Length: 539
Image (spheres, rainbow, N blue to C red):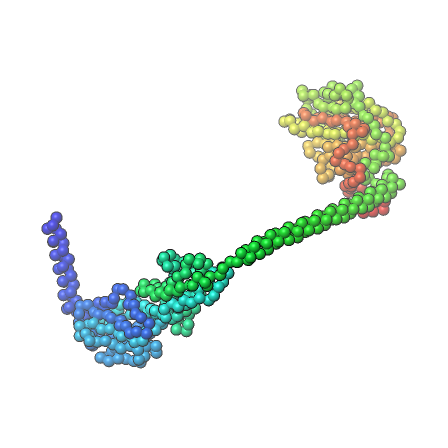
């Protein structure tokens, strides 16, 4: 192993020797400069050395020291003399070539009276014939300004303010306060400024509140050199402010008085806010009372106008009920289809679970299929007067045929065997629901929502059967100009598993429809009626 290492070192030595020999036989060379930055004091002189390798004379070479750009010449040597024409103005008269060892290829440029602006990167350029090389140097100019000066500004609060100043430092020095034990004390503030020459002026402040720290030092250190300058100041004990017992008592009394006054102000403010809130609540209550009174008066006026000519206005189902007799309708089991189930109180009808499901028992004319409609009549019979009743419809969600129902009025002479047409021509005045559509014998009814609670109004005097949505009070449809034949009875038919119809009690008013706030929803077929009603019910 030792023999192998010796052989390796010998081989490297011969390789280096061959490289040197090859360079001696030609004009090739290298330019070498210091690898570490050159540090010099502000105002002093320094040199920027460079040399060629292998050693050779540089008398007949072109030598140039320049800044970042080739044209920014610090010094130019060519044809054995200085070429001042290309030199920067800042270096005229301040730079010269040191050529004591130029025959060995070792030359330097000396710069006199260093400035802050001289700090930075330099390049030295050597050219021989067509061969040229260059190297880079870094110059750092530092300024150790006037040492720190510490002085007392005077008492401040419970302590003494000290100020430490320094001038003409570069770069910015590190400022540190210390007590007599060498413990560091952070500065209260530090202010740095630069003059036209780029030198720093420093002012650091400190407030000493501990009378035991009567000896304080301020140091300023150059971060490049590590050189430090220190100045110490002693503070006489008599300079520290002393707290009088009377001052302490006064301060405590003042604090207690402040708290008391604050509490009084807060309680007064709170009482004023409470009073303000009470007044606002009272005003709001009075306003609501006035608004309610005005609304009641307006509703009373509208109701009076409505009652004067209610027949022309298809509006306000709750007001309309006052003109009709409420009827407690019950179902007649003798008229019920055998596939229908009636409740014990005869107020609800539903379809048997095993009942056959018809394909489409529609009320539309044109159906020629002979299919069965499951229907039942009410026990109540009417020939004169005005009557109304309410029903609720619940649509089944079970899988099977889509639900269908129809409610309204029919004559006791109407034919209800097998399949039949529920139309006025057959003495049926009904609205029906099938496949998600609400319709009459002639048209589909376009409503915002399908009604679940329906009011049926039978008027023999005006020959009218009307239907209303009792949840929002809107008008659904009216059959007018009817020629009644014989006795009229409530009519119900339904189809679809899970669907059932419930007759509401006469005293069972809807919760969602208060009498004090009637709502109106007119359809296109009510235009003529609505135009007559508008004068009665101004907005």
